[in-house]
Length: 495
Image 1 (cartoon, rainbow, N blue to C red):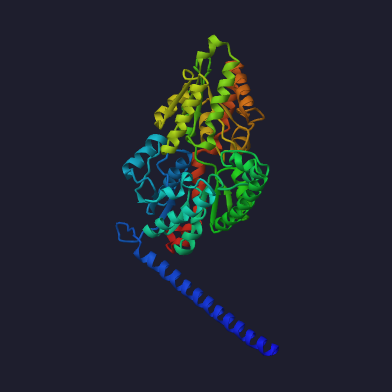
Image 2: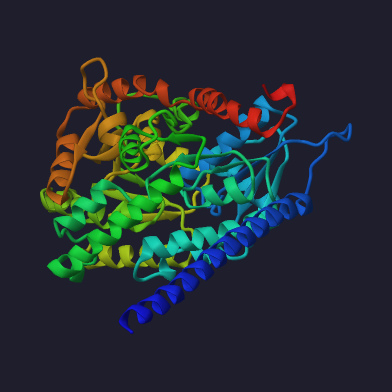
C-alpha cells in the first residue's frame, strides 16, 4: 500500500511539474509575442521626421526631464545638442522634458541667456507629464529604489510618446537604458554626471555616518544600518546590470569614472569626457590685481542639499568671528544659483533663516535664477569662489570661477580634488578644504595673502583650464557618438 501511495504521489507530482513547464513555456511565448508586437507597434505609430526631399531623418533623442533647470548638467545637454547639430545638420534632435510649464521658445531662450548657447538647428520637445515620479520628495524611504522605478515609468511615457533612432540619457537615469534598447529597439548611450549609488555611499552607511542621504536614526542603529547596506548592495548590482546595456558610456570626471567602472564593470565602454565649460567667455574678464576688489566670496550652484550651502554660511561666520568687529561689514558672502521647484525655494528659506540666526543678514546675499550677464558681473567683482559639495562629480562652477579669475576654494574630494584644483606647472591653482574649520581657515588665509600672491595663483589656475573647453567636449562627444549612427542607419552619410 505504501508503494502504491508513492506511485500515485509521484504521478501527481509529474503531472503538476508537466503543467508548470507547459505554463512556463506558454508564458514565455506569450511574453515574447507581446514584447515584439509592442516593439513593432511603437515603431510604426511613432512620429517620423523628413527633410525637404522627403527622406526620413535620423532622430537623436536626449532624456533630460529637467532641461530648463539652468545647472551644469543642462550646459552639457545644450552643448551636446549643438555638437550633434553641427556635425549632423540633417539629424533631428529631440529632447524629452518634464518642463510642461515652459514653451520651446522659453526653454531655448533660457539656454541662450544662462549659457550663451544658440543652437544652429531646430529641436523637437516631447513633454512628459509625470516627472514627479522621479522626484526624491515622493519617496521619503527607499528613495533610490523609488526614483529608479519612477524613472522607468517616466521612460515608458517617453517611449510611448516617441521612439527615437538613437537614445541618450544625459541625467543619470540608467534604468531607462534597457527600456529603450530592448523595447525601443535603438542603440543607447549615456553621459553620467554622478552615479546614482557609489562605493562612498556604501562606505558611509557601513561606517554609520549621518548625511543628507543617511538619516541619523539609521546611522545610530546597527540593525537598520546593516539592512540598508544589504539594500544598497542589491541596488548597486541592479544599477550595474542596467548600465551595462549602454553601447557608449561617457563620464564627466576621474571620480565618476572610478565609481562607474567599479559598479558597471565595462572598461571598454567607459570614457572620460570633461563637461564643456564656458571658459572662453569668462576668460574675457580682465585678470588684474584684486587690490581694489570688494572682499566678496561667491557661491555658484543649484540650491540642492548635496551642495551643502549651510557649510558655506557656517564657515563664513566662523571666519568673520576672527575679524575685528569694526571690519566685518567689508566682507560679504553671495549665494547665487537656480531654484528648480518649491523644494529648492524651501531650502533657500532655511538658509536665510540660518544667516539670520547667525546675525549675518548684512553679510550674506542671495541671488536666484540669475542670467548669464549677471553671472559674469558677479564673478568679475568677487575675490573668492567657494564650492562645498562633498564628492562633487565634477564641478563646472569650479572651472568657471577659476576661468573668471576668482581664487577658488573647493571641497577636498571628488572632481575638484582629482581633476580641477590640482597643481599646474608644479604650482597651486586654488585651495581645498573639508569642514567648517578648514574652510574658515582657508578664507582667512586667502584674505591675508598679498594681491600679488593671489594673482600668481589666479593666473596659474586660468592657464590650466584648456582641457575643459567646449571645443574639447564637442570633439570627444562627436567621436564617441559616431558608432551610434552606424547602428541606427544604413545611410552612409553617418559612417
